[in-house]
Image (cartoon, rainbow, N blue to C red; front, side):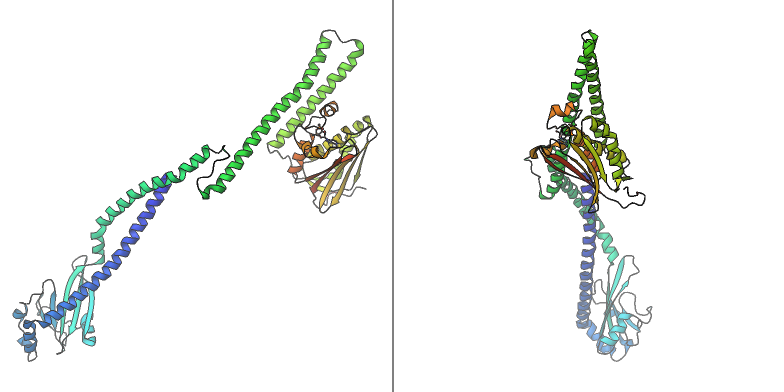
Length: 461
Ligand code: ADP
């Protein structure tokens, strides 16, 4: 992270240095050009005013041949080249190359401009590499043109000359960027590290505003994780505890037989107890395996098309014997309703609800299973006229190992996991559970599944 910040800062600095240098160069170069042209203008006017020039100018009026190059050469022009051009473009005098060798100057842009406008300027690349020549031409009253010129560095030349300074400045800025980047990244990262260390403390505040949503999310996730770990630990402890009871019973009964303490009359009872406890153990193990599968996100084949009514009828058939044994009237009615999900899981859900209806009922009671359509939902209802559940306990019965009456649940083969499984399976199938229960009157648990339109399921009458 720190390295990334450093690289980005340095890159931004480099861009800034390049742009600022380029912009400065352009601005100063323009100023420089204006300055040179102004200097040339001033030079031309000063030269015109000199006595030497005036004298030559006057004598020129009569005859160009009268112009004395040697006199004009005496003029102090410094670096400035002076050229005097006749109206027809002939070079009358040039203090640099001499007049005779020079070609007609009428085609030069500054001369043409001066001829028409009185004065003219132009800049041309010089023969010397990296230099430009600046020209200023002035038409005199007699129609001849006085031209002054000088050489100066071209923009590329100025740029190359400024490169070392630019490089030094860039290096300096790079250095500053690395130091700043380091400090900046520390400033950003350190509070995050601190926050990570103190994530357990509920009072710890995020170091800056921008981190608030992130901190809140992390904290929630952390809390959820702790909660999940605790639930799992509790679950493991509960399972171990639940396993212990039937195993202790089985071991006790086996010991009776082993020591020859079981008389022939009680033998049958002992065998029954061993079987009941083994069944409980098996049920407990089955439910635990199911729950842990669901916990690990195993959703089964969640895309089967299931006829909810058909599944309910099958479950009722399977539990008919158990209902009769408990003197409970078990009925199933309704119409075909197509839902999508895992058939095994759906049957598990229905059986758990029906079994509870039988288990927490009174002899002579009933359990009515029905399937109906309601607002685009397939609704499974399991109604009983059993012992019911008190209002304050209704929300808790879906917790793992929560039982209203522990001994009644155990005696009837309950594991305390049935409704937890129901809740889990319903969630996987996007179904909502509704519970209505009154102690002494009975319980109705309805599961609302999203219904799908089906062509394969035929209405069962
Ligand atoms: P169990 O295996 O003990 O039946 P469940 O998770 O299925 O576990 O149910 C939790 C508790 O909810 C039961 O122990 C029982 O006290 C109560 N309960 C569940 N269904 C009914 C019902 N239909 N009528 C009355 N009480 C019920």
